[in-house]
Length: 521
Image 1 (cartoon, rainbow, N blue to C red):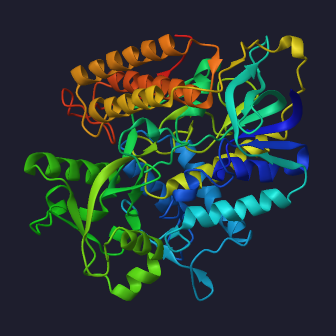
Image 2 (tube, rainbow, N blue to C red; image 1 turned 180 degrees about the horizontal axis):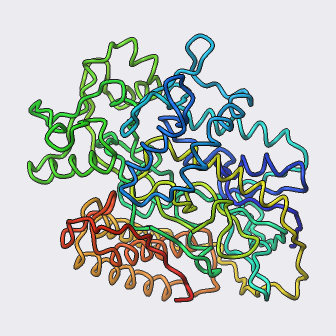
């Protein structure tokens, strides 16, 4: 099958939906998502969206907090764009009937680690879900937009001039391949932390966008900076993902303690529980390792129970399902892989190094986050740069290519795969990444990790040679590629900075430099 559209969006999270909404007045838009329309990392964002909305706040203060959290690696121009354009766009979101929490006539603003002002707009503790549903409603009612669920994008199509001109997609329900040609392609595929054994990400976060862009020749940047959320619920899994206990819980007064009651964060940072996530995650990791603990405790006893239930109803309800009353008991927590700071490299308008290919959201690298993402900046970054990409995409000159110019694909469908073998390989991959590319790394272990991933790739190739396809096989190929890119990036950084800590190089170098990898090098 072959389809044509003006704008093709891969992914249905914040970035993809906002881009689709914005460009819908300028031509036909097709949105592809490999699961249901609301399944994305956006949907699981509890904390909120940060913007300088308060009377005591300013974009400059937000910029300073963001840069401080980024450990010298934030791109100043990108941060300026985000903090300046963010407040207006959040107000536009509010106008889409998204139910942000309010106090009187004003948005209720929270505070999280690294912020010096209350600037986090939220919808109780289900902000991502509220934003996602609001945007889906807006997109579905917009002119010229079609949304296809359960469409797995296999790879990008490029013409003989190297421009991206569409994708090859697989419809899970019909079992058919489709070539979709487009003037503009937006990658908004979300995260990649499913490559780790312990992660807050849903099963769809397998790094497909980064892998597809790399195979098409795009540059990637700073993939060594993986953010481990400090507090996921110990011993609990929901659809295979660790359940996140929001940063905002500590913002409202939650205290981290060892099981014997010692408050340990003041020993690691003057801001204690409100220190940047990288500091808190490493502190917990160190307490677990040195004291041989299974978990630490998040003590909410200083927060009135009524406020807990009003501010964090979803967290309270979910913990209750696991037999824990957070208004009476401390919460056992451990770190889990949460967010990829790095991704497909873009400019300030969402343009990648491949003409006609844009990227926004977690799969993209704008340079905003530096070496450590400031809490609740992720939704804002996705919103701002998806908006700018829409502006750029609607003004660029592009035309649909002829089929003769499309790069060929070998298309052989294998509809039945040995799920036990595939699951075994996936489990080995995720254990390898957790062990060799975790919160604290060493050069020798990272080399071992790359060797192990190479073995798994050879094993996969022996089972399913390139050209034989199923969604599960392709996801595993993408995860193996992305895992190797993470380790390559980490091995090239001979320092510790932000989220990246390596035992052989514990100091931070004077000059902050991005790690940029290119398939052409």
